[in-house]
Image (cartoon, rainbow, N blue to C red; front, side, top):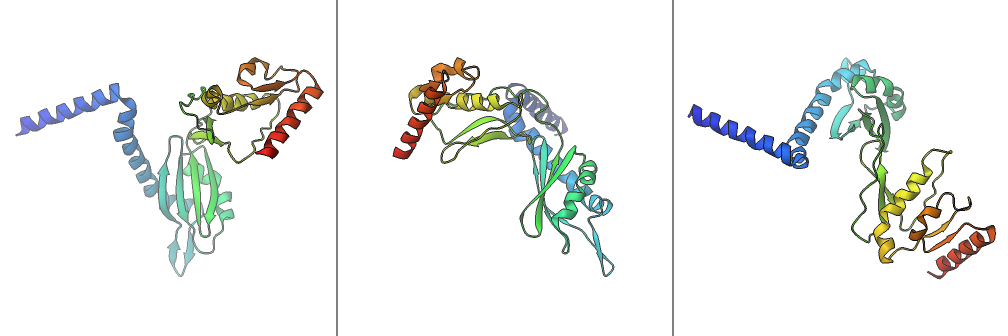
Length: 244
């Protein structure tokens, strides 16, 4: 029986190694991901009481120590979110002031606080910088969907999804901040609906074409040669918008 048990264990380890080698995403989804989340969540819960005491967030009442309750832990790729019930008599400002201490105590580079309902708050512990390296261009979607487009990665490691339908998008920033990257990422995400004619792009480049001219084949209309031409395009766009 012992020999059979060892054979089964060896076979199981071999299967796991093969899955990890040939299907790393599946391995992360089924094995390493859940294990990491469980380990990280357990660590937060073990440290919680001590961290609350040492960071000055526990309170004393009639000889009792009252600590904030850790209600939920959401483990992410580079940051974790902790749902906390505050002690009666506390405000979110107390936790905001304690963010540097909370980050260091919970092994994070940075901590942030926000609240969605009275008496509760979210504590986000950022463990790594998802934007330390250049973010590669996102895959071109294979559908004609235009309601939203993925343009990059957020600082928490999750996709940066930009909503387009029913809204206006204004991109601003100093020179070199990456405004052009956002514009071209949106156009890349809309490449298929542009190709199929579902989307029309009307572009204006006040810099005489320096910014957008090389994307000319993507545009249904493009104006850059004069102020009059650009004004005419914008007036035509208003006419179309009013008629729709």
